[in-house]
Length: 121
Length: 107
Image (cartoon, rainbow over all chains, first blue to last red; front, side):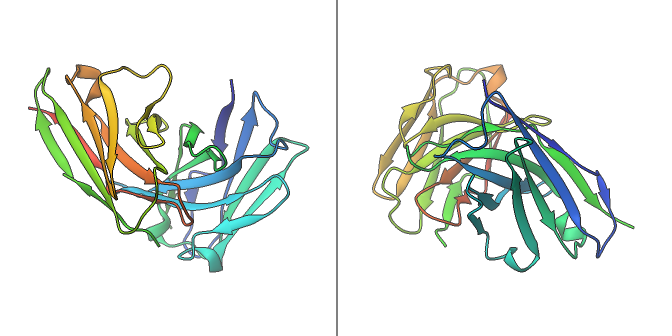
């Protein structure tokens, strides 16, 4: 059973960098066929897709965040990470990591439970 | 980007009621749509994929259908554990886009 778990600081100051890591267990992140993804939910709002990374290092970012966003992967640790620079209060959200299944048309099956990140001084 | 217009944004219903939630895509997405249930403190749970395929282990009271660019999630008989927020997701193209969500509350 694949499991994903987000980790990282719950509080980030404005203008600083938000960093989160997703640790994958029960399956290898190096296995092809999946896009390792980040999604967020602003308080009281809907879900927003952030971007993905493939095991090869290929990435695709939401254009609305692209200038501030880096997603990286560490196959030796079975982890992938999100870095979002120059954060503001608008980046306060619950951040989820998830596995996208693009080649079998099934969307996201495995999700982390989410990590609340608050941007505040 | 493909826009997903989901309605209603909220609804109140009683146990045993039939509930229908709709998502309309701004352009064709074939059947590349899935439905998720979100409860506080938990990750989203996939209910339906490929527009109408029930996720293994999910109650058969949930069903999905599609007609062109309009997609529907139906709960045939609402149960206490179904009170949650529901989202559609198009995974036909990038960026992936979600509907705005439907909060199902107890009447």
